[in-house]
Image 1 (cartoon, rainbow, N blue to C red):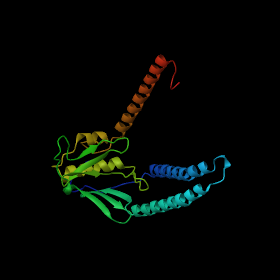
Image 2 (image 1 turned 90 degrees about the vertical axis):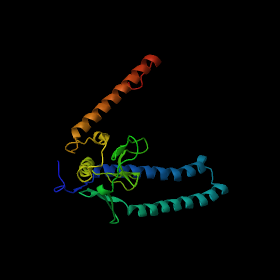
Image 3 (image 1 turned 60 degrees about the vertical axis):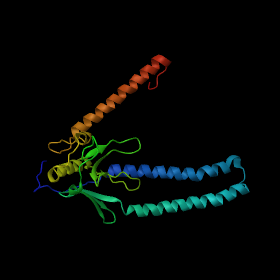
Image 4 (image 1 turned 180 degrees about the vertical axis):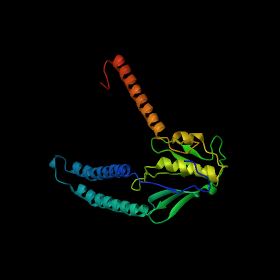
Length: 239
C-alpha cells in the first residue's frame, strides 16, 4: 500500500516461531554433538581394549575436564550477557527502523541519519550479496561508512526471524523514499527482495516462481552431470 508523510503507519515484526524453533533445535543438537565429542573422544581412546587408565591419562583427565567445565561455564556466562542484547521486536515507522532489545534498549537507524554513497557503482541504499558463510543484507551509509540494516537476526542463541520480514523491508524502503527522497535506492534491492518499486509491496508470487525456477535448474544440472558420468564412466550417480 502506498502512503504519504501524513498517514505513514508503524509496522512491527511478527515472529516466525516455526523457523525460530527449528534454528534453536538445530543449534542445540549441534552443541550437544560437539559436547559429546569433546567428552567421549578422550575417554574412548583411554578405554580402548578395556585397558586400565594410566597415570599419564589420569593427569590428563585432571587437567582436561576442569578446563572443559570452565570453558562451558564461560560460554554460558557469555550467552547470559549477550542475551540482554537479544532482539525481541523490529519496528519501522516514520522515523526509521528500530531494533528493540531484551534489556529495553532500542537501537535505531533513522532516515535522517542516512547519507549518500561516495563509493563508485554503489547506491545510497544497496545490498550485500550473501556468501557460503554469511547471509546477504541491505546496507546504507552513515559517517561515510557502510552500515548493515537488518530485518532479521539469525545469530546463534539470539535468533530473531520475523515472518513479515519482506513487508518490513518494503515499508522501510517506502519510508526512505518519503522522508529522505535524496537517498537513492538500488534497483537490485527491490529485485533481490521481491519488492514492487511502485507500491513497495512484497511480491510473494514472484518469489515462489523464482525459487521454483532455481530448483528446476538445479535438477536439470544434476541430471546433466549424471548423464555425462553415465556415458563417460559407465555408472550413474543418481539412478
